[in-house]
Image (tube, rainbow, N blue to C red; front, side):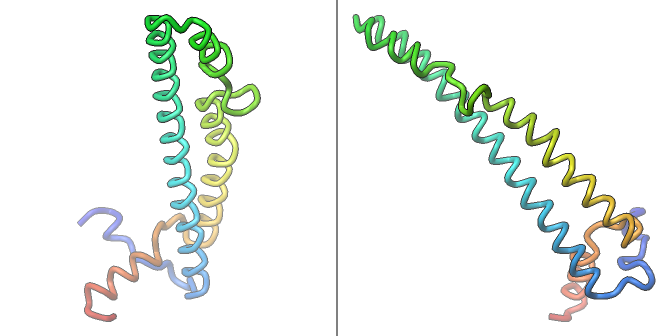
Length: 134
């Protein structure tokens, strides 16, 4: 049995309403983490598009279309996705600002109300399901 399994699911005196609120806070954090994953997908797809643009510029030049290659190169290739920012900068700002604050606040609330115990709501749901209580 792991240390996590050995600890009681619910600290003494923790009421149902608080367990549900902590469950909702955990769900919100999980959703924000999914959003972060989408930022990484956005970052990678945008980078891939820029690499394709560079290839398109090369191909346009080879096909004799210098003017069109210049337009793609000067107007689009390497362009900021937001004013003054590439996608990696958007991710860094998200991580250093919103995400860091979210993680800190979630941990603070969990420490104050549940002694740091995570996923109490889910742990109790697991026990009910495994005990046949549906």
